[in-house]
Amino acid sequence: MADFKREENAEWFEVHSGAVTNTNAGSTVYVTIDTTPICPNMMDSEFRAMAGHLLRRSVIAVDRRIADLNHNDSKTRQRMLYWFGRTDDDTRQYLLNGFFKVSAVLKSLCPTNFIRSDPESDRQLG
Picture 1 (cartoon, rainbow, N blue to C red):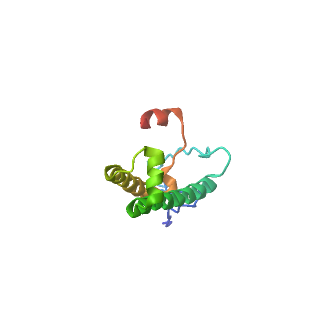
Picture 2 (cartoon, one colour):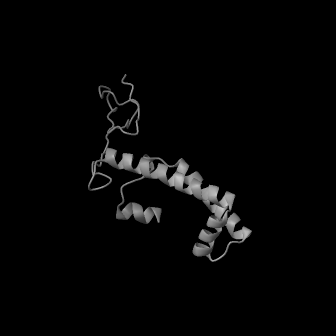
Picture 3 (cartoon, rainbow, N blue to C red):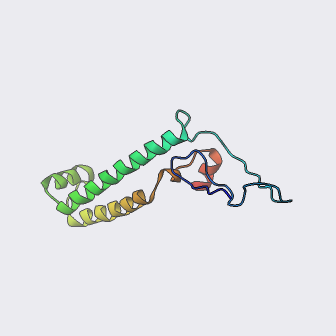
């Protein structure tokens, strides 16, 4: 039996663990594959590479904001005053809690979490 492995950059994925041949009666596995690229101007592998890069950069940016808020220097307080109109500790803690949650979500994502947009899936996902 073939030993298929799913890889991030592969253009194929295992669709059925036992679908090597259809020599047994009733063992046929029908698969519908939508080959429309996730993005109209690049291959799916290019999209996954770009999404992975952007996710890594996003994690770095959010973690930098967390470090800034933990350090709480004058530059951080100036940024808080500009964006939120206040520099009190409750606001700083609120931002830290939010950034920790955003960081956790970003770190849990991978390029295969992104799907092609269409009206039906958009309606289902809200």
